[in-house]
Image (cartoon, rainbow over all chains, first blue to last red; front, side, top):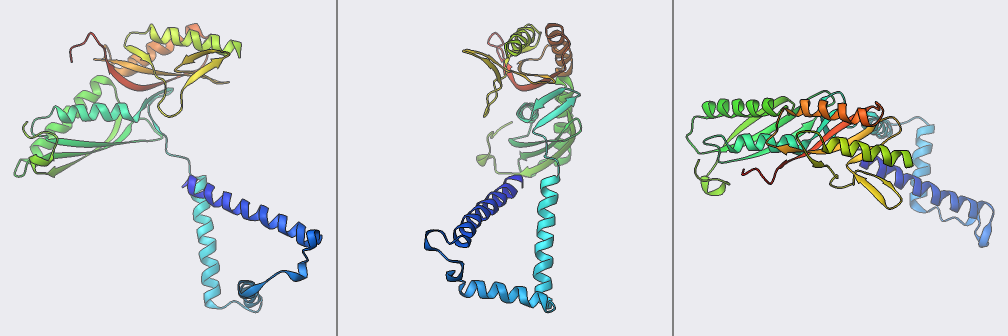
Length: 187
Length: 100
């Protein structure tokens, strides 16, 4: 969102700078340009009509447009003020771990679990210690999902606690897959 | 600046001497390093209020990562006059003498 806001700000500032240059050139009648010769056109007419309509008592459409602009501005402001999601996983005060390291550990634990054919891991850092891990594990159709899931969870927790990699939330999703389309066919 | 490179050098030396550390972490997209003249110390960023040490841990781990971090911090603080130290583990590397 920060990038989106920055792009909007850059475009706005470029627009303002250009308007400023034009305002100076036309106001001081430089290079033969005069304010009276400005081509207002249909866009200018509609803008002045819109402003006049606001002055003479806004209609429901005008109110809706203004409310929408205000809400959009507020949403962008909140997005900008919201603290950024950290990139590194906090372990304790002053000690961090890259998300890749946690991801590697979780993937290694998943790959060593029987009946898991393939897995994909997503790690999200949080402001407090520990990472949020989402793991998609592929298994064969007809396998006992609950049993495999609890085995997988135990292996991941064991591996992470032995290495000290911090995970505060672990979500496991079991996906029934065709072994021909997964990394491993037999486990 | 000259003090920064000396601190960085000392921090890197202390980090590499810690059990469980494989190498300094160099950063993937933006390089983490301290520069002075033609010299560069990778994996250490000396900031006004703290020293950031990026390291790669050796796998299999000789002890849990928090313990490695505590040892590393203690060593780095000794070498850098007790400056606040942040430690970032950037990767795990299987050592060449390990047949994994």
